[in-house]
Length: 251
Ligand SMILES: CC(C)=CCNc1ncnc2c1ncn2[C@@H]1O[C@H](COP(=O)(O)O)[C@@H](O)[C@H]1O
Image (cartoon, rainbow, N blue to C red; front, side, top):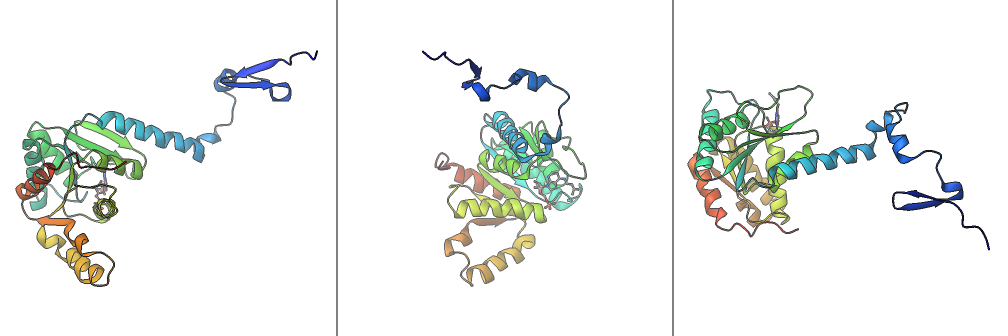
């Protein structure tokens, strides 16, 4: 009878003969003399990306009803729209919503300030940027992300709707991501409200006169964006749509 070859158990894996390693997994883990270049490789990045989702989901899962507010990082305290952002944060709090922003300055800070001053839940989902700005001081529940796409998942996953103040590329990115998710039915029953009729008029004109007229979007897509001037109107739209809560998102 042939002698049973020696088996090496590596976790769930059984290794024999030429497959038996000369060191144990623990030894390799604890060995400090290794090249550290692997921390900059994609497989390791996948772990960090996973960690961002774990951290975000874990922190926000029990948030309750929430609304994400977007808008320019450059909006100055003292400006009309900053004041409207503060009012919006307060009214959303009064209506029972947590306020989620990108945690930065400008419109984000304004909405967080309103929520904070009204005693609400003021959430900031920060992003690592080459020019460090950090979370604004009105954020009480903050998560910092390395990756935009992981952070954007949190904005949409934990909100019942979006309110969008005037902004630039970042704001448009967040706005059109939500519109695309709604158009493709990745999210349903998700109001998207723009604040500032004058500011948004040229964009809405382009959407109607060019995108719709040239057949790039359907007629019903024209109704995916609502535009108002007053924070109270935005909250009323979100709240009335909130009656359909639970219709929410297919897997
Ligand atoms: C002064 C300055 C540029 C600070 C940048 N600091 C930021 N901190 C956090 N989120 C940001 C920042 N800049 C852009 N964003 C994201 O992009 C949107 C604003 O971009 P924008 O200013 O519209 O294009 C925000 O809703 C936010 O989610």
